[in-house]
Length: 227
Ligand SMILES: NC(=O)CC[C@H](N)C(=O)O
Image 1 (cartoon, protein in one colour):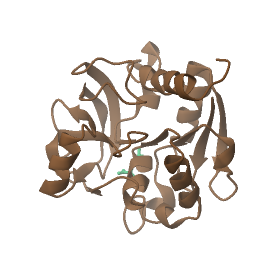
Image 2: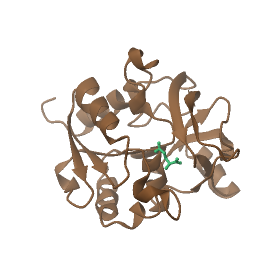
Image 3: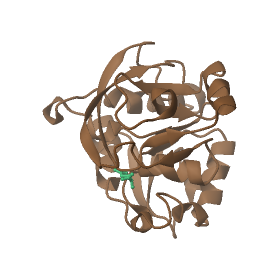
């Protein structure tokens, strides 16, 4: 499995994402500059966290107008796993690949600490290595992590099992305690917490590693010929 870690001006979690998949997971990975990437060459697309375009206008809003988004959309339509973490999630929302929007945290403060998440759906390409309702420890680090959607969308997300992670204790005011959602097809995941910062016990938790292992297992089961 070959992963593209897409780097935008202002990304700052790209190397952590690369380290997680390359060194901890043992998959092939490239850091690809958003203006030069050819995502057709990759099996999975990873959008890392950070402050693309300095969070001007709204977090993720400017990156969402970049031509690379059409390639990300094509990867999603081809059924490839697409993961957006934090600013990557914000870009997926701003580009309409996932429903809803991100507001500033309820307390208007940047928050950076580890949260307990509940795995609400363990039957996605990103979560099959977890158990349903399992509690996992994953760090957050964001100023705009207050997920918003209207009531109809929230009900639809719940009915379709598109809510993948919730916070045990809601840190930012997110609707429905949502920490991460998938698209209807299930192959595009956006989440505010950072699994790439939780891939080794030395970091305080390795609960994020199974998310990447899940992607690899999914890819092997669906796409690999000899794996
Ligand atoms: N770690 C991140 O990706 C930060 C995301 C974002 N720009 C925010 O602070 O809301």
